[in-house]
Length: 105
Image (cartoon, rainbow, N blue to C red):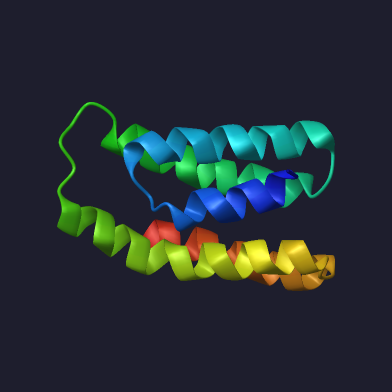
C-alpha cells in the first residue's frame, strides 16, 4: 500500500492519539519514498504538533471532535488531491488551508 492510500485509511480512523503516531509514521515513509515530500512533511508536522499537545493528558472526546471538525475535511481534500496527482499549485492551496486551520485551533 502506498503512503497516500495508507494515510487515507488512517485518517478514516480518526484523530485519536494512538492513531496520530501511525499517521506521523505514514508521512515519514512518504518523505523517505521521495514522492510529495512537502505535503508529507507538512501533514506530519501538524499531526506531530497535535500529538505533542495531547501527549500525557486525558483528551476529552469533545476536544477530539472539535479538532477533527477543523482539520479532517482539509486533510481529506489534501489526501484526495495527492491521490489524483494534482498539480503543485493546487496541493499548495490545500497545505495553506491545513496550516491556517491548525493555527486557528
